Length: 261
Image (cartoon, rainbow, N blue to C red; front, top):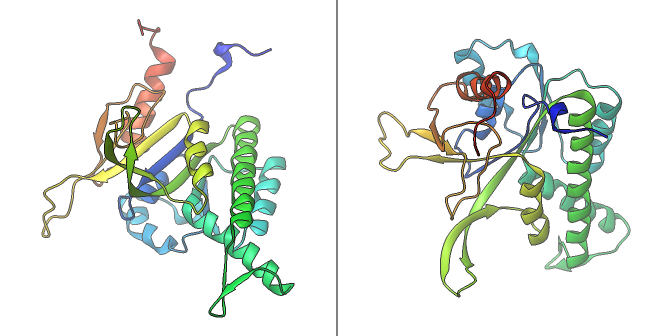
């Protein structure tokens, strides 16, 4: 039976959430190498500039592009047996969900099944059960890989603004993870010890660009949390997130005696 002394704070299971263009994939690139990207978004070329700016050996960043769930699951199962990487990135959960739903459409269409509107195949409610099941399997396999091979895992997710209602009937705007099925999007954060909400500071200057940053604590509207001694807000800009903030926080956890919580 393990006890808390066996926990290694340097092996992280992360969720990077935020709107497109807030440098989630770039921040993941700063994590220990070699890195493997499950590329569901199909935009790996976006990492070209930070790889050069941070002097990263591009051969230390491997990827495969996926358009269906079956091939991705096969790769994950290979990593369960043998994984040479120090960081695995799912980029992104949102596009992975789309790939799952496209797979169900394609398979049902090949059998002459499924719902069709104006000659266009569309997903039905039962397809979202397949999405839910596949994404739960994704998380379960990644948890196994992290535990057995001591690999950092980063799930990248896009968010959308949505009106939410509190227990007292008041409404507020919140940003939630985008997947086709509503249930699984709410479950995924529960499995992640590190949840960072990425954003750009207001007051964007077209000449100098925005100030990229993230939150590590829940703001009420945007979900975030951390098990590391990180600042509540990090303005990382063009700097590597892992080397400048996360690694020092991990070292602090290992070196300092526990303080009053």
